Length: 424
Image (tube, rainbow, N blue to C red; front, side):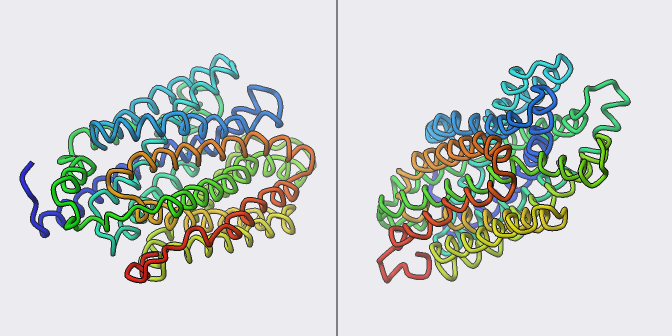
């Protein structure tokens, strides 16, 4: 590989961010549909609301199981092949989900959702791919642009539920699976995009520059801060656990709320419309303002924005406690939940990258994604039981434990190098 001038590096980074952004739009469609329909499909096939959280848990378990192997694969073969591997697994998972609904086999549904989760590990990795060639002054901004791009797919996924059901019914697909047709097409497009356009590979290029430029590399300081990195991993994992546990049970809570409001069982269309709108607003909160949090993270410091995210998560959980009987209240809580997650994960991911050398980054990024998914899976699994025992407000109160822990441990995330104060 020939040496790159500064202008060539900047141009390559801009092109990489554009490609990753388009890929995130496409990949977000499958994620949005799975989040919205997974709990409803699980409850329908298992016959138990208490087991509905296993769908979201399976998505996160799949992502957790594949995150570290995918990061190692990326370090050896690059982001291009690792991202396409994720797309391929998601495609297989979507097909299995549809088959499981047709056969009404609950374990098969979980297998399909696990594979979709493995594919989502690739989507998560995209945000780190945006930092491979980024300068320290714009690292959080570039990361957040790719995260923001998920808004289009993530919001359209839930909103495609009702049209998808119409199309699915017309061609004889099982209930709650029609929108997966759109997901299938989007995943194929994302796979082709990464395979063809993501050249040269950003991670392989960054590793090459790091090995040959050493201290003169424009991509980072070369200083390793393992304590700060561990805090960043914890902050991202804890914030994700809060978001996933509450979000996983919201479709079930809304289903019960719709039944109570009408005094009887409502139609599937009424339920899916209410769930689709609420989750779409939540996903918009997750990704819509991520560039703002990225820019603030670059200017004000990573740790400050992590703590800002905890404040927003606190507001969300309190809203869920005191307004759980109102559809509007639940929507507001879910929007705030998404915003808090966005601030914490964008800043936390930038803090993790900033505190790790180029050689250490892929490994720690894989650990971060794996732990993030594992804690979310545990939270989503426990959330089903907590919901049945203590209701939606009780679930929000339990989730507060993570927010408190992240705030209390925040001194560990401070970079005490005055030369790096703007990006600490």
